[in-house]
Image 1 (cartoon, rainbow over the protein chains, first blue to last red):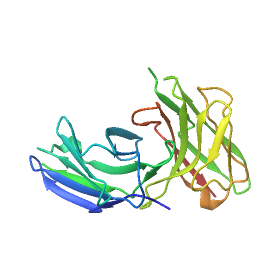
Image 2 (image 1 turned 30 degrees about the vertical axis):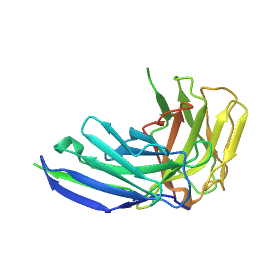
Image 3 (image 1 turned 60 degrees about the vertical axis):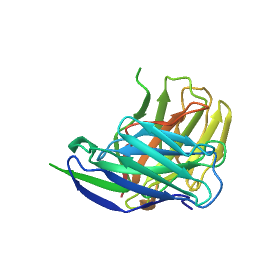
Length: 110
Length: 111
C-alpha cells in the first residue's frame, strides 16, 4: 500500500505566484523526499528532509516536516512556466524502500 | 555521466511472452530499484537491491524477477507477460545517503 498521499491532486496557479502542496504519511520514517516529474519523463529528486529536521530550503523550494502530524509540505515560490510538472512525495521507512504518493499536478499559467 | 540508463524505451509484448528490461547505472550506487507507474497511482516498488547479490521484493513483485550480479546492472524480467503489466517502468539507483536517480522509463504495452 502507498504510504504517502499528496494534497491537492491538482493545482493551477499564475506565473509568479507560490504553490503549496502537502503530503501525509502513515508510519514512522527515516526521511521524506520530494520529486518532480515532467510529462512522460523520469523523476528528478528535489529535496530530502530527515526525520529530525523540521525545515529545509533549496533555491525556490521550501520543505517542512512535522513528524507528530506525519505530514510534510512543499512550497515553490515565484513559480515559473518550467515548474509545470507532477510533484511526488516519497517516504523512506525501511532500508531505502521508497513509498510514493499519487502526486500533485501543478500547472503554471503564463 | 550517463546516470541511469534504461532500455528499451518502448516495448509491445503479446500475452505470455517474456522479456527483460535493462537498467544500468554508472554512479557506483549500492541501492537499485524497479518501480511501475500506473495512472493515478504514483510509483509502486516491484523489487529492490541493496548491493550486488542481494535482492528483495517490494510491494508488487508477482510476475517479475530480478538479479544483481554486478553493482552496475539490475535487469527486470517479465516471466509471462499479462495485460495487467501494461505500465511505465522506472529503474532508480540511490547512494546510501541522498535522493534517488531515475532512468527515463520503459513504456510497456501487453496485448
